[in-house]
Length: 166
Image 1: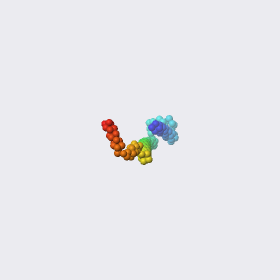
Image 2 (image 1 turned 90 degrees about the vertical axis):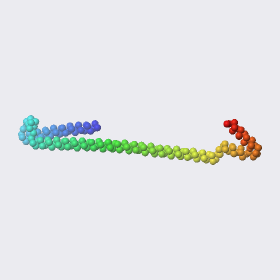
Image 3 (image 1 turned 180 degrees about the horizontal axis):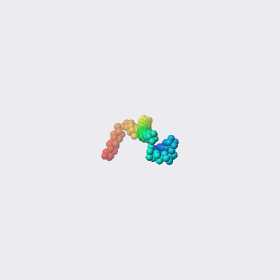
Image 4 (image 1 turned 60 degrees about the vertical axis):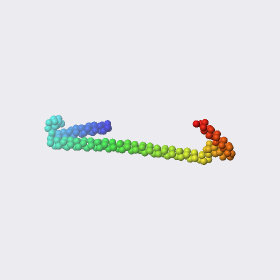
């Protein structure tokens, strides 16, 4: 913003200097054509401007005004375009961040599912090769009981233990 203002100020100064230079040139040309001195031309110029000089000054001013309007329009369009590009870049950056986040979440979810599947497989293999200790003990005890008297004594003991629990 400061650069644009500085450029505009410099442009105005250059325009003023050009106007002054053109005025000086017209004075000298006019003096040469009429054979007058610089002071006489300056005094006359202040009060009386020739028709040709008026047309030249008017054309110069019209050119300067048109150029100023054109440059102002170009600056406004450039600022608008820069804002649009900046907004588009910010939107692209935000979209890329969301895409990265979604990808990272998907990868993490896949890793967690894989780890859980490995745990389940490990447990299944463990139970396949290492039978549950309690059920192995109960089946061993029940298989070892051949005598109906021992079986009934054991059933009575289990029932008694359960009744004490309640």
